[in-house]
Amino acid sequence: MICKRCNHINNDGAKFCIKCGAPMDENYSQSQNINYNQPNYNDYRYPNNNQTDWAQIIKIIIGTLVVVAVIVLLGKQFMGNDNSDVATQSEQAASSSNQQSQDSSQSNTDPAYNEYNNYTSKNEYNSYTNNNEYNSYTRNNSSSSNKTGGYIISYSSDVLLTSSDIQGLSKQQLRYARNEIYARHGRKFQSQDLRNYFNSKSWYQGVIEPSNFNDKTMLTNIEIKNIQFLKSVEDSM
Image (cartoon, rainbow, N blue to C red; front, side, top):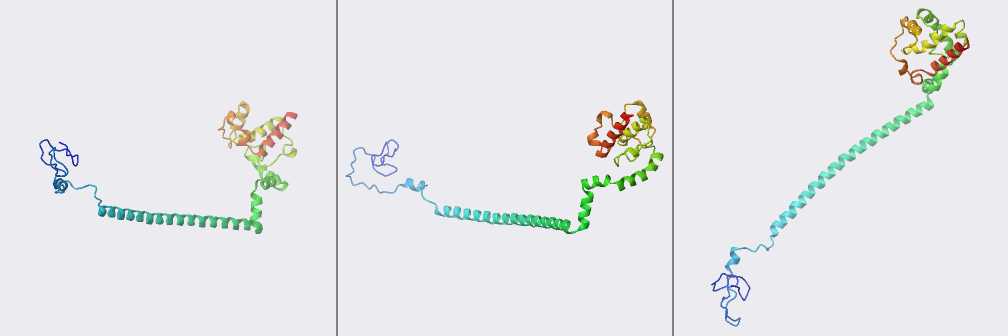
């Protein structure tokens, strides 16, 4: 049965609406003196869930503020550590820059420092090894090695050779002297006479196959030029 006053659905046979208390008589009129304001006991059994719980809302707001405050404090501490690390790195970079500046200043003012750098530079080294005084010293101190070590020219890897270095050598000796440069680097030989010759030398250790030997990467410029010089003289004989 539907209440004509509040449209609430009641059980069949109900005399009063359980929601508003109005009589369920179909012939009742609103002019009848009916107390529509009698208490609705259903409201006490079922509380209104739409009522606002302000205490719960306040607790949520306070909890949110506490979490935000903790996050802010942790963020400041983390940023402080990062700034400290950045400052340390900056100080180290500045110290390194100052050291480089001091080294550069020393290179401009210290003659001994500049002399050392010039001496150890590649161009200066090449100039020094081509110096007549150095070449003469090397030749004089290598003369005994030619006899005791079994070398044709023991200094052919150190100085550029001239005609005076090969004076009196035969074509076969020139061939040995040329391949002597390869033998110092452990190159093996395909020719039987070269294998026999260098295997008789106590200083020779053949470990590199001819196919694996690269002149450009394994020989110095002086050695390459001396090989070319000896080959040209050998071919002219």
